Image 1 (cartoon, rainbow, N blue to C red):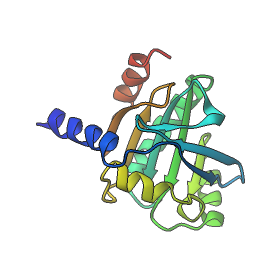
Image 2: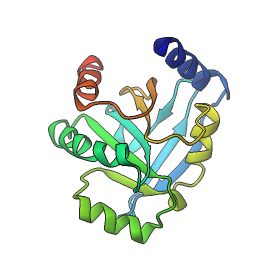
Image 3: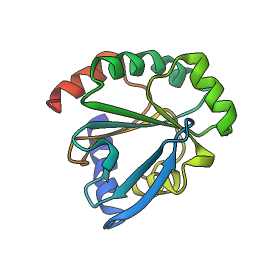
Image 4: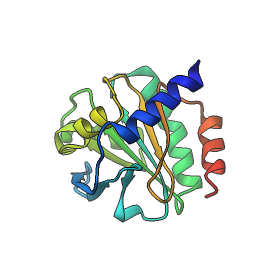
Length: 168
């Protein structure tokens, strides 16, 4: 049943909008600009060309989200040349507060406040039929094609298996 639901979500991601080069940009808590191009197959991040992308929507007060941070930090360290993790905080923490949160938690990957996410949150909500459950993960292969859409936390071992499956 879980696999069928996942297949429906991934199929919906591809078909809800026939996106052709929808362009967006976001800014991290450190002021780094990230460009994003929506395609029919997923999303392209020109700054991370050739890398697997973990795009996670999380909350600063969400227990499973907080539990995921150490896993993502380890994976970012281990696969830094082949993996990019981009996390968008969606529980309303402003950019300044989120920057402090990132420092306190020692986060070593890109983090974006919703106020700096531009159209990305709405775009994902529409394309993936995301209704706000967090954590919410979209995994893209090195070509920018969606490989997984997951509501809820995945254990570190599952994330690592996914990375290995994508052959990075």
